[in-house]
Amino acid sequence: MSNARFGAMVEGDVAQKLHSAVVRQGVRIALGGKIDPSFAGGMLTLEVELVSIRTGRLIGDGPMIHELRGRFGPAVVVRVGGIELLVVSIATKYLICTYSNLLISTRRAKVSWR
Image (tube, rainbow, N blue to C red; front, side, top):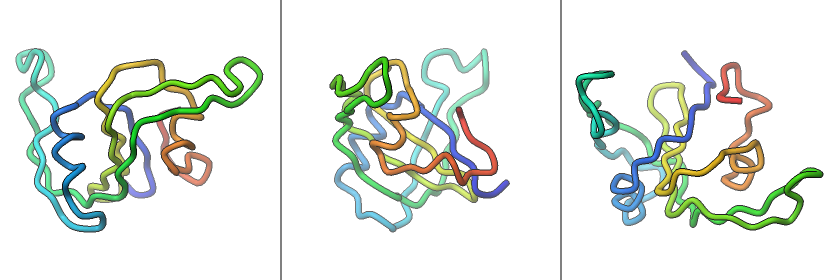
């Protein structure tokens, strides 16, 4: 799979850890499997490239949430293979503006979360 986007995964410990990493470097992380490994399997240990580090602040757009502010805590975008993955600290409702605030383009993706 290439040119795909996925998110958001609520993994505050991973997002916080990666805030001290260097963008464009490879990092080993463990994602998923923390709530109920018997349901969907255990953690995935992945070698990823850190694409961006974000504060998690959101400014809404569009007619319903225009200029409303929100936050989803420290956030990062990582790339594994051809997939960009959004990792955040706080669970909230994610809208297209969430991704554009993180400088992630969903319009050019072959596969996207929207």
